[in-house]
Image 1 (tube, helix red, strand yellow):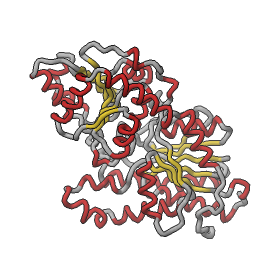
Image 2: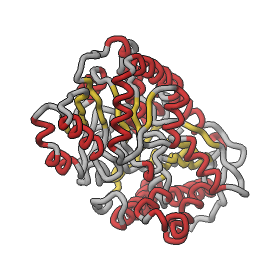
Image 3: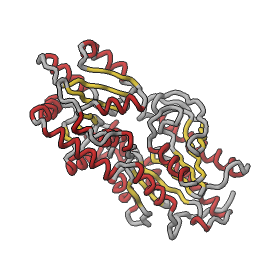
Image 4: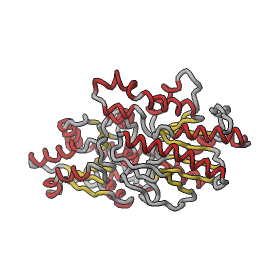
Length: 429
């Protein structure tokens, strides 16, 4: 089949050596013999800079759509960027088909967010299905892959007392776009069950498309299975945060806890931050004395080998995503679990339920130093707890996050035929 993957956010192969969801998905499809094109943006969501072109790799090609810059993740400038990406994708896709530069796609997998791209993919699908005979593959079908709860995530910019009453009104246009995406999809996939539940609420009373859950996952082969029994237990222990440093993460509370330990003349844990983002310079400036004492370590953006080494030598992993972000189960949770690390999270929600079900970690209250302090103390006072949770975290990763298993299952779901593709076929212009 000809498979198109449309996602402007994930890092490209020339930007990282740790494949995220869409690189892994493209590679899985290509390994199975499909022709794969990944459509992305020429503006990096992570670094907020223009991208360098990326050569074809791992058996698939990459096409970049020109888009305007933005600095804040929740902003009108970002929405303008998304609209430019959606419009540019449609324009360049149709031109490539018309010029016979690309074969028509059998499947278009569109991430959500961004909003608006799915609707352009539906237009491409309908034109193809109206004009070409593709019955052998069930026609061109569009699969919406839910990465985040949009526009619900935007509610966090509103004061708490306004969210319930004004959120739906203020973001009515975005809600309509999300509804069209869910109701127009031939299939829906998601990185969390809570996102599939959200999609079901949008399609209630209409045709419900087939749905499939596939977490971000991790490459389990990178991590040793005996980490729980080989980790160093001498103090200071090592707690690690792996990921972006932006406003969606409660990193300041972690630094406040390290400062509290210093005031108490204790050194039970060393805190390691690996990653980068707009808040990184500010966090480093605020914690210079902690850094000089070796209590806090900022590694910056590091490669896969360094990430693996850091996780292998850690004792505890941190997920400080703010609950208002509505993240279901972030990338870092899969990496942590695969490396056999107990996960300490303030996210709650779906990840909180998974950690509780598997006894693979603990929770604390966002912004509450005392709550975070008590969570750390629980691991210090109960030395058998991190060992047991380490084993359980690895078991959870083997059951839910193994990309060698869950990604082939995802590609099988995407390529399978559906009885009635969800297309209100339109005539050619």
